[in-house]
Amino acid sequence: MKALLGTLIFTVLAPGPVLVGVPYLLVTSGLELSFAIGNLRFIGIIPIAIGTAGYIWTAWDFVFAGKGTPAPVGPPRMLVSRRLYRIVRNPMYIGVLFILVGEAILFMSWTLLAYAGLAWFLFHLFVVCYEEPNLRKKFGASYEEYLNSVPRWIPRAKRAKLTAE
Image (cartoon, rainbow, N blue to C red):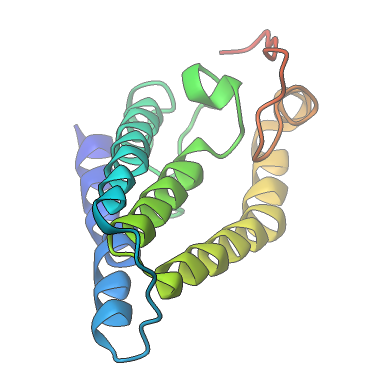
């Protein structure tokens, strides 16, 4: 229950502002660069729905398989390598990026699309410079096997095989 509550709090404090607060400020700031696609903009709902489902699913796995939260202050005690984590190592970040791209389409905003690109770059730096080195230390050989079996961002055509759950 503690991990679930921690994950809910983390979601409000971290992805919440990234997905709601900053996009709102960018769209209403006067710095907005928009494009016109008419009613096709509603296609943006699809990546928003996919990203939301992916985020919820991966957060669930952090709580119930990993016995922790996505927050660095309460990380999972177990390596999470099931479901979406068998396809890519960072599906939670990818879910957030899907939502941001969906918002850019829905609000017809080049500014939000550029923001999504910046968010990906910052996520990548955080993963490479902080998360992966810490996970190597914490989980050792099982994480090394995971690194060698599952790509960081883009799924491979062949499904990864892992021995550890």
